[in-house]
Amino acid sequence: MVAPPQPHAMVLPFPAQGHVIPLMELSHRLVEHGFKIDFVNTEFNNERILKSLEDKGTIPEGIHMLSIPDGLDPADDHTDIGKLVGGLSAAMFSPLEEMIRIKKIKWMIADVSMSWALELTNTVGVRIALFSTYSASVFALRMKLPKLIEDGVIDESGNVKRHEMIQLMPPIDSTEIPWVSLGSTQERRRVNIRNVLKTNRLMALPEAIICNTFREVESEALAVLPNALPVGPLVAPMSRPTGHFWPEDQTCLTWLDTQAPSSVIYVAFGSSTVFDTTRFQELANGLALSGWPFVWVVRPNFTKEIEEEWFKQFKHSVDGKGLVVSWAPQQRVLSHPSVACFMTHCGWNSTMEGLLHGVPFLCCPYFADQFCNQSYVCNVWKTGLKLCANEQGVVTKEEIRNKVAQLLGDEDTKARAVMWKNKAYASIKEGESSHENLLKLVNLLREV
Image 1 (cartoon, rainbow, N blue to C red):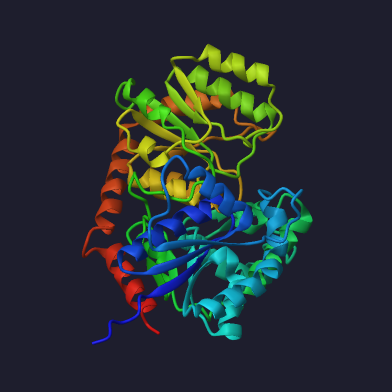
Image 2 (cartoon, rainbow, N blue to C red; image 1 turned 180 degrees about the vertical axis):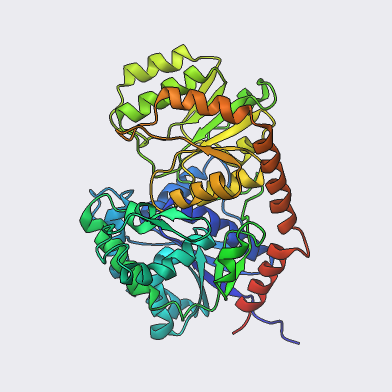
């Protein structure tokens, strides 16, 4: 009797850290179910990932790392998401078509931010499941965007015409619509909105919407997405390579071992947030002013304006009380008993990780879906507090000190964080909702 061929799928993330990590973890899960995965990064990001893995090990058998040019010139800033978006489909579409034909790929899992890839269904007949790297709520908001334009809340260039609360779960202000806040210029907002409207017309093509969430935490949003498969939280085991762009500094774990239980503020703003001098210095001084120990992730491109001598003096002044690292093993930090709270940009991955580890949040969103995630944390789940900026858009050191004191003295918020931790862990257990949805996905991808 001839054994059936090994199931084979291609995975296509948007070229940003917060998109690669959950899709890499989903790929690991599929490999555990017997799949062979072709994981397609841009050449720039593929090189970064392989370099960061040098210290940690190699991608396990079953995941084949492939790469395609992103359309930018070598001298361009490949981390500029706004610049990337415009030319990705033109640069990647034909090479993907060729790859699919040569490898005889029957199934692709495409990042929702690469929804233009749905056209491949028509050109090469590949079946596609979309993966939402943001919440089910933001996906539902995406589908509602034409109605918001029709109703005059925003226009087709992403300009806010009516200042009002969008009554979704969670409710958000019209100025915080992700594709509006993502654009730093009017032209970029226009491109963002145009891309969403164009690819929304393809949303009948995916055979499933895979969501890094779970039923209990987003029941209302999931109810309006009929073909959603919530399989989250997609959180990797501590030892598993996850596609990070920077090497992780493990020294913070040893440092955390020396701190008292529930005493450390963990501060990390993801891979895309950028602070100017004023914001950076207020954050630094606010952490020192709080009086609590802290681990602060300052990645290489977090700020371009800070004076090295000033920062060197700051680190010296907090030596023993605070630790600054360039990139951290976030899950291991969040699960450490010394960590008391998580100061975050509220990216969806970080939000799911904080929720899974039962850590209260201090929220400081930067752009895109992060305002919606903050609304979930502060207004719906009630597991954290918002750090409010002043009229100049700066979160002051006094605001940081006051909110740290308020959060760490609030036993009700801590209790709710533990409750959601228990619900998150329950959802991924065998026989429970996210685990069952993963099995449904596995069976779907085995169809030929």
